[in-house]
Amino acid sequence: MSRPLRLFVSATPDLEAEREVIGQVVARLPVTVGWEIKRTPRRGEPLPPALEAVAACDFYLFLLGKDIAAPAGVEWDVARRAGKRPLAYVKDVLHTPAAQVFLRDTRVAWTRFASDEELWELVQAALAERLLERAPAYGLSAVEHEALAALLQKQEEQPPTEAPAVEGRPKGAAGGGVILGPDSLPPGGVLVSAED
Image 1 (cartoon, rainbow, N blue to C red):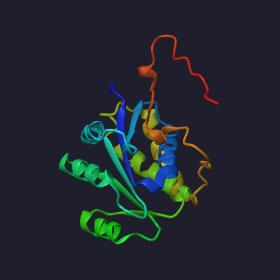
Image 2 (cartoon, rainbow, N blue to C red):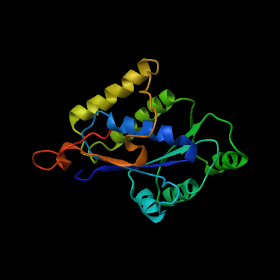
Image 3 (cartoon, rainbow, N blue to C red):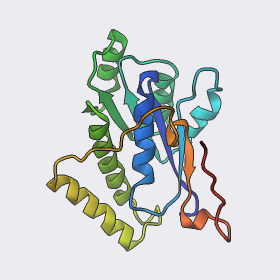
Image 4 (tube, rainbow, N blue to C red):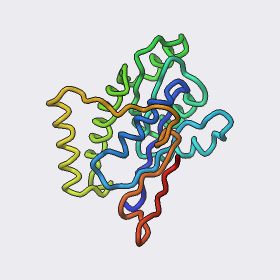
């Protein structure tokens, strides 16, 4: 596949730290394909580009916290109409009546999580499984296929490990981002500078 894989993360406003976990999971998958990560727009950001990204994504992931808030519900509807198979996660917190209705009416299997560590393990396994389902279409090598299969096997055999702590202002893909694969780099690579 010559283009990066597209992941859209719809999440309620109370799950900013969890968005960072998702970005770190994607960056640490044992594959060299590029990724483009888009997210629910922040307050004041335009909605139409996000909805276009939802309709065009390869993977649609939804994180529900204590309440369903706009525009996450609209993104959900666009994803469902576009035929996306959502990876749906709900945090074990007290949910508002609106969130409870949303959980009931969506009619999908929600995966519950209580901590960043649980979310890390769950999303890593789900993305690895989805990548393996279409490995040739995504351009995965035999080595990458084996590495993903080994990652899944290891998760089945061992208790969950700790995810790296996420503190302070998001610095990774929580605000959206691009993870370049080796085929995406220009000759000579890319100059990378660190932000303080």
